[in-house]
Amino acid sequence: MNADGSYSYTVDNTVAAVNVLKTGESLTETYIYTLTDADGDTDTATLTITVFGVNDTPQVSNDSNTNVEDQVQTGNVLANDSDPDGDELSVTAFTINGENYTPGDSASIPGIGTFTLNSDG
Image 1 (cartoon, helix red, strand yellow):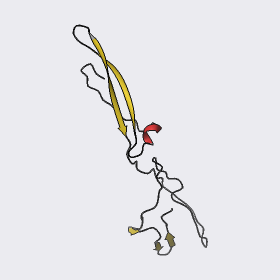
Image 2 (cartoon, rainbow, N blue to C red; image 1 turned 90 degrees about the vertical axis):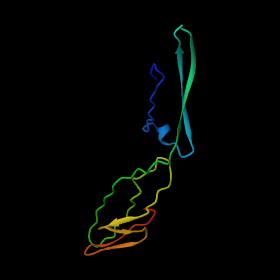
Image 3 (cartoon, rainbow, N blue to C red; image 1 turned 45 degrees about the vertical axis):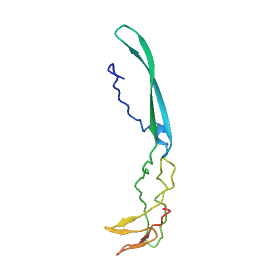
Image 4 (cartoon, rainbow, N blue to C red; image 1 turned 90 degrees about the horizontal axis):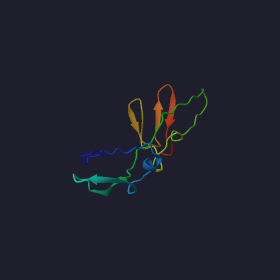
């Protein structure tokens, strides 16, 4: 807080208590400050800042896997992903060679094989 009464407040999203706030949840921080007039008289007041939660975007990571010929490879692309709000994650689309697919579709990759990705990863 500055002498002229102005202040700046920046929310630190790296603090767990802030980052886990869901939509509709909030937390407050209260600051007490003292005012002094030209005669030296003082009084105190409070500034209360309320931080409201929002629906944070999922934290996703790239995936990779290897396979040998004549073998079926399975995995789950959601295994290394998370949502700060604890929301359930699901695959809603995937793209191979510029072509868009919906979960459950099988993408035929000429000369390589077939790829299927379900909504549960």
